[in-house]
Length: 118
Image 1 (tube, rainbow, N blue to C red):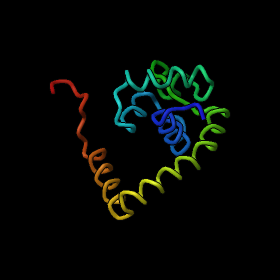
Image 2: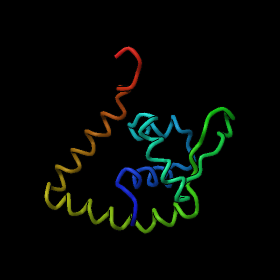
Image 3: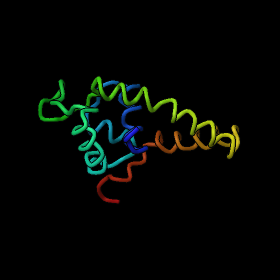
Image 4: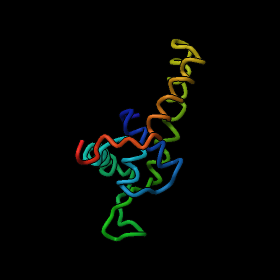
């Protein structure tokens, strides 16, 4: 496939949500902007994503999935599904569901580990 798990997660989010501002994408990925930018650079180089001025604020940047990025996502998705099934088989379907629910709760808690003053 030629992409890392983090890069697949970015493609997955963009395929699901559409174009997103970099700050919004970083928050949705529970990732700081610097780490996100480091992951986006090779993806932009490989023409999987395009970074453009945000339509809402020309000073901000938005990330858009390209046609090549959509193709790569569609190629990788069945592999991701297979890994998820393998994980559930080893860990347990109920336990995996509980783990995913707990992770979503943490993400939706409002906790911001990159907030100033921590």
